[in-house]
Amino acid sequence: MYTLIKQSDQSKARLGELKTAHGTIPTPFFMTIATKGVVRSVDAVELQENLKLPIILSNTYHLWLRPGLEILQAAGGLHQFMNWPGPILTDSGGYQVFSLSHLRKLSEEGVKFQSHIDGRWLFLSPEEAIKIQQTIGSDMMMVLDECVPYPAEYDYAKKSTERSLRWAQRCLEYKNNNDDYKSNQQQALFAIVQGGVYQDLRQQNAKDLAALNFDGYAIGGLAVGEPRQEMYQILDWVIPELPENKARYLMGVGYPQEIVEGVRRGVDMFDCVIPTREARHGRLYLWQHDDLSVEDFYSTIHIKNEQFQQDFAPIDHNCDCYTCKNFSRAYLNHLFRVDDPLFLRLATIHNVSFYQKLMMKIREGIEGGRL
Image (cartoon, rainbow, N blue to C red; front, side):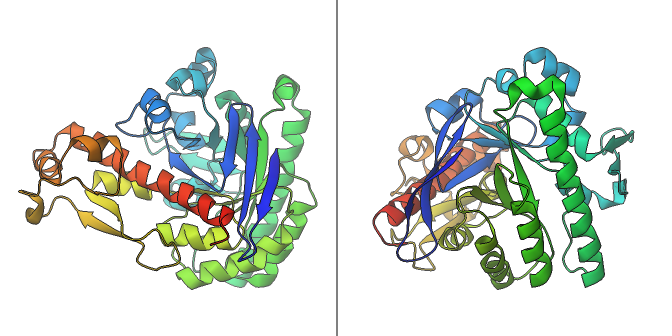
């Protein structure tokens, strides 16, 4: 599934390819978030034809609740339902164990959730998490885990990590032994390394999961409040324990400089809500330097600010996205102020384009010996 093409001489950065049932993706890459089967305000045809996204990420928990498995199954899976021909990664619902802690009850068997939509109680076991993702038809599935919060006491982190390991084993066993889905073994299953901020827990969990021979390995439980340098330290502990012939995925990260630092430490895959969420709030990304080693290689503007009301320049002269080629800062400022939905689309297109160009520059930097 993963092929290493080049290892950097400057760092642990690496170029590779990740082969899926819906296409091969050059690594490192960034996954744009389509939580509920949609990148908000932008349809799948535009994602493919204009933005040329290599992959999207959708949320198992939210798709389970709406539109529900019956509709997804009748549609033939999420690819057909949203008319997206490329690869899809789905998380397992494990992050909701963390983010919706006031609506759940955790046990060895799984997680009992209270729906944030209608208050229904639902049960998510490791087996059910895989079954749901198999119905969705994603190319890459994630094991069910608990995202250890920050800060967490050592004993809590240890018990949680050990339980997540047992859940990972159950996910793998269900995938391999579920007769209904043996014909769809093209779906990859990724493990998730947990352990909080504790070196021994992180390294042991990585070793234990590596021994189970998953299709890929994610590092979870980061970008949940810990200092940035602490996140980098955890990557330095974990990455050497993971197989070189499998893709490495840093979940929920992040800002451009964090992605660059993650790549330098050997990470291949990233996702985050930042480009799309910040677009909706009027924060747009601009290029400052081609040299990604410079801390301020990018900047941001808040397009809602009064200073842009009569600024007829594009968002970024160095950007060739649809928005920058056709519309001015003044027009986007106007759309934001009148609360027109067109603003969401144009701002999202720009920020998503910025992140795709960031990954292209990173790959070029590795190829050219600069990263």
